[in-house]
Length: 331
Image 1: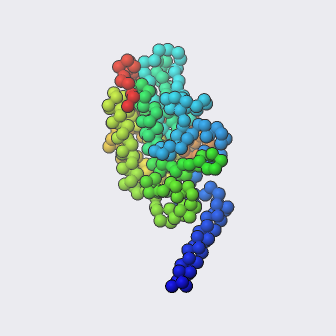
Image 2: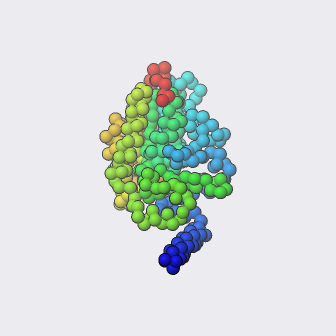
Image 3: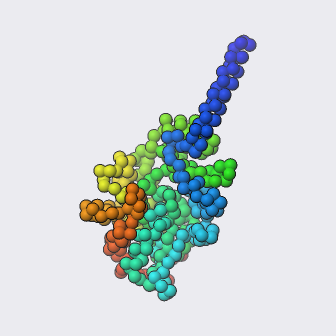
């Protein structure tokens, strides 16, 4: 019996030493590696730690988000910027939601320039690296108190990615990881503290199934459409494609685009796809990328063509309501 107990203790100690050794080795070799379980959002860590820590904060529901009211960042309403064609009285407010394509403002600016309406205010609420669920969550939590007449939600073809796992390391720097598994299947504490757990995720949990992505997209669109209907706000969606020929897209990219289109058309009255704009420009051999090789962000030429399509499809030149008729958008 004594030998049996001794063997169990030795086996347990050996296992702990082996696990500890593996953890230590992985941390040395891959200090911030996702180890196949996803990818790191390195921009949160690579920029100035002090500046990013002040601007972005972890959020249990959203993953990470801007901290409203920080100088040089988002205002107290969670908006990146507001702009008017000039100082005229405001008759219409359009809020643009989305990820980095919205935040960088090329399409928003092109719409403003082409409309040339001095009485329309353009509110940019886009956030770099957000997915669809984060965009909706951030809007409902912070931006929904702003009185607007119209919400134009620019949804990117890559916006069905999982909500990231986000935490601060010992230095206070934000670390963020987009996992290949739906967030509800990932234990954040284990992911943060165990590199072996990250390998286990890569080995045993596959990417979200098509049905999961579709259901999440439909729920996100439905939440926005319901909010807008209850508060008398017009809500439209613009679907922004990955800037590459269809033949160059991965099976996941194609699956996500189809899920977004289907979910949008089932829940939102007006869905504008920019895929025809992309196809026309590529067929003419025109450049569409902000930087060569960047298939996620448009250049000025694509932004101008996209803006023209959006203005026409949504009738923005004719839709100029009096702001006094809009309802307060607080929840």
